[in-house]
Amino acid sequence: MRTPIIAGNWKMNKTIPEAIELANSLKREFLDIQGVEVVICPPFTALSEVFEILNSSNIKLGAQNMSCQEEGAFTGEVSAKMLRDAGCQFVILGHSERRQYFFETDNLINNKIKAALKNNLTPIVCVGETLDERENEKTFDVIQTQISGVLKDIKAVDLEKIIFAYEPVWAIGTGKNATSAQAEEVHKFIRSFLKKCYNEETANAVRIQYGGSVKPENFSELISQEDIDGALVGGASLQMEAFVKIVKQCLAS
Ligand code: PGA
Image (tube, rainbow, N blue to C red):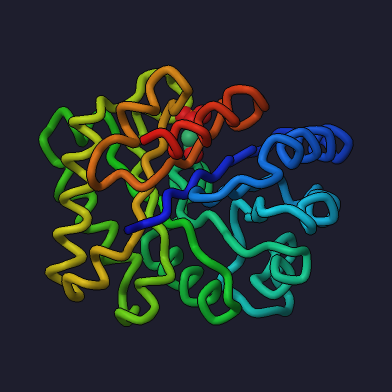
């Protein structure tokens, strides 16, 4: 059985006091939550403060990005070691906004995954097709290329430590989510591709989140699908009530 995992991607939102307020409310809500893993990913500036709050809870901390470099003259970058130091256990890598606005490639994401694993951070690795690619029936090709690229030279023992997030680009922040059938089709494809590249046992253990306009109104159907193991939530993770409802739907499924 794969434990469902819900991660809140706060993106470039929340000042430190705002982040503290939301983290405190979530901590109260999830005081004794079990059977679902909850991760929140505030902006870099609020990580340490939020960690202080989460320290005595079972909500875990993640970052939204990091450098593939260990340390040194890389102005503006944040390393895996620094994220560990700030209390992170997770890091989102290869989000489509990073790919689109900051030109991140599968090769760069592959290097970031290796750096994260080396430093005991669990990478949440995002893949997904654009609307144009879906309409031209290239979804599976795109996903396969992204997965093979980001997993280059990664062994089966390490694959187990990676979480994938299938996030169709056309569904992110648009209010238009993939239907549960569309999402399940791609999740199944990812798992079978991992079986082919690695082995059945490892592929069956890997958790694959869905992301893209997840909200309480659409999530129960998504999480009831066999290969959907949770969600990477953007907009709705900024609203305490919506995020709580999404997490609780995992327990009901
Ligand atoms: P959204 O974002 O839930 O606001 O669509 C998801 C994401 O970008 O991870």
